[in-house]
Image 1 (tube, rainbow, N blue to C red):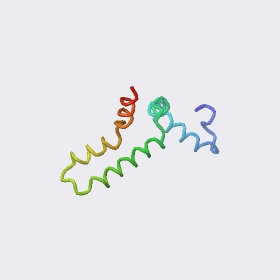
Image 2 (image 1 turned 90 degrees about the vertical axis):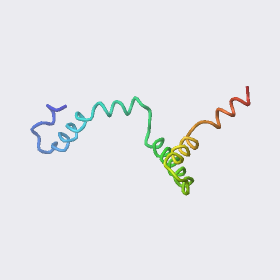
Image 3 (image 1 turned 45 degrees about the vertical axis):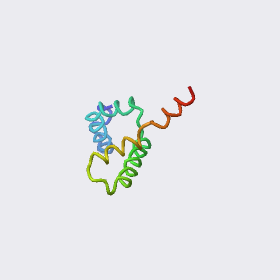
Image 4 (image 1 turned 90 degrees about the horizontal axis):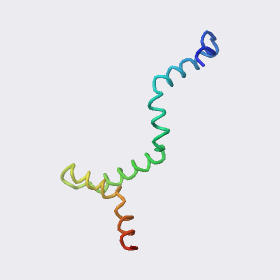
Length: 85
């Protein structure tokens, strides 16, 4: 691909994009393999924001972290599974 775009003034933006892709190739592949999407990450961020709003008034950072774990953990699903067995 680099040979096809090198030396052609019209395709200089493609050279820059190709260079960026080559520089970040490992991270791009890791993202595709991981299965994490921006929607999932945004959902997790929403959980963290909810924990932050619930944690107002708590005295330390450890309580905030505990709230994140309580909101984001699958405890409810684990309890549902335990009840059905």
